[in-house]
Length: 396
Image 1 (cartoon, rainbow, N blue to C red):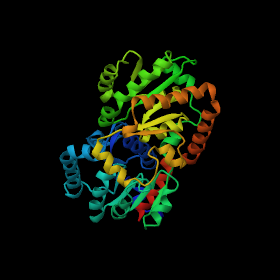
Image 2 (spheres, one colour):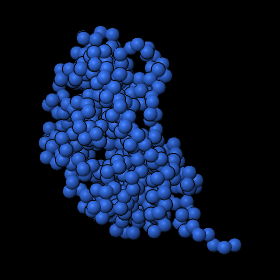
Image 3 (cartoon, rainbow, N blue to C red):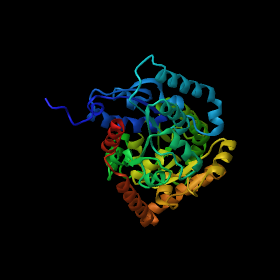
Image 4 (cartoon, rainbow, N blue to C red):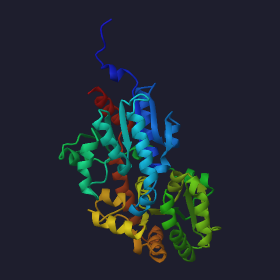
């Protein structure tokens, strides 16, 4: 029999180590693993991950929520544990006690992953970083670290490969996985039925973040804003999708704000809640892009430790913080950050969207049309494109 023209490494199922930090990374890595398993059914994958990855056969040595810390001061509090995990993982991969991975993929979490990638790359392990760090938004100096650390970068935004290429970094645009998961036309009626809501209800989704630190800084003021909005709109419905591990804390903060009986707090189901709502009050982060893909008007807010905020501001390169505004390059939706994110200001911004629903529907239509355009720009076969790029790296 003639030898196959396909390189042996491409034929064999690779052993891939991944590190995904927090909920969004777990989701992105899970979608990536779908493509891998279609190409390599016997693929072995292990490292740091969450439940979405585990459902796809991933062996989690540590849970992804160990890395779910945001903000300089907050990271310092967990620094020893996080660095300890990274050192243990590096030793495990390089010690020779077990098989060396064919490839390491760092999924987001750049503060954790880039240093690890650099160490592995120096020892001859191929490295890929999935999701280009936001060097176009802040911390432009990080691009040299990306160059030292990653053999290749998988980009979720179309303008990123050219930016990386200018610095000699190989990259592939694979689209944003969420743009393929979220339908172009969400079924609001079905989502409302699942949540026990009526078609005629006015619904506000409250998303105070997926990290404990975010919830601690934002949820109370979000609920205080909800109390103010409810005075003007007594029949309004508030729905909060809570990560199960944070549900008790969110319920406690809703009770502290005096609205526990007026808000519906559900475990998970963030996509169902976004599909069902008219408008959302939402923490800055990946969830804002999800809200945009659901074509929902929103008020973006953020608040963090004062020192973390001061450091972050000095490194910021663009006037926008929310992903929908960054990608559209304009303030399509309002942002209320740090001291500006008062309950009264948040309530006022929400009220403007609610008023527009009846008095200026064209304002909402314009936002929905812009978000539809954004959705189509980001919609690609991410699993296929990423897997094709990975196979080329394995073959080199």
